[in-house]
Length: 329
Figure 1 (cartoon, helix red, strand yellow):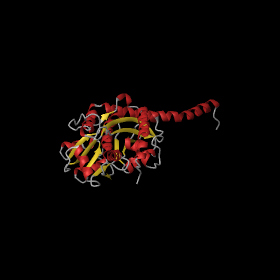
Figure 2: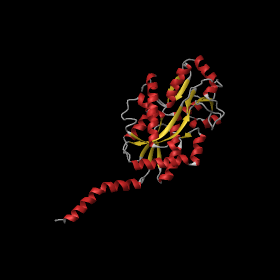
Figure 3: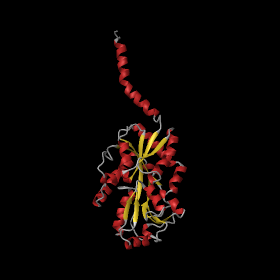
Figure 4: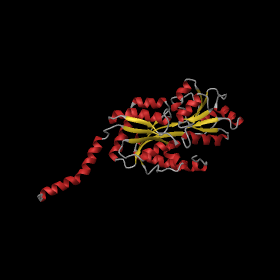
């Protein structure tokens, strides 16, 4: 059968246009099914809590369920690696933190690149950390805690969220600054470590207020200091480290949202808008305030801001971590 030249040209033009049309239509219909949000630490920890608060509100903007999945192990690198290998279609994203998108790159030999294999969406929240201890610990303040650790070398135990996690790095620095011989006990996330702290199985932790303030208010654990220049608005009764006897020992952890590299820009924009809308919600703001999380300034909730933050933090912390000889075991 012979096609007239005019019909052939029209058909060829239509076929050539199909990829562009389908791409636009696909972006316009995104999301058309549930989204998986990876939290690379155990349930109950700070990252898991941030992810669940965010996902709960984002689903209203996106019109689809957002399923938080905990993929734990190796300082969060297993969960992050799963996202790096995922299809860049916007249906698998990750809530990461300072540990998973900065520190692990200086500790592990990763099968992915922390910068090149991800598309940043936006920074989310940041929080200082607090020094906490089990209820039965004899110390009643930070000075007494440090004195007890020095008087009992090798006997004190400090729980961490795992090798390379924020609480592990902060524990190393705490040990260097105080010259106290305290054992660092790794867990598969901060959640399980806090559970053992509340049960009296370990002596202390340095972790975010997200998962310890409720226990402190219930009298289940002791709080000694916040690692910040100012007190927490949500817990003004906790002194700063400056006030408690370890001036300048400031530790904070930020969280951000990433997608696999190559995710369409229109999809990144939709995810960014939904997350920003969530962070502006009064209920979400209050939930974060209640657990000591500060929401990132609105004008900084951009992919470029998260990329710049990650770059600056890598330049700052990699030399510190490497000089400390912290390696994967």
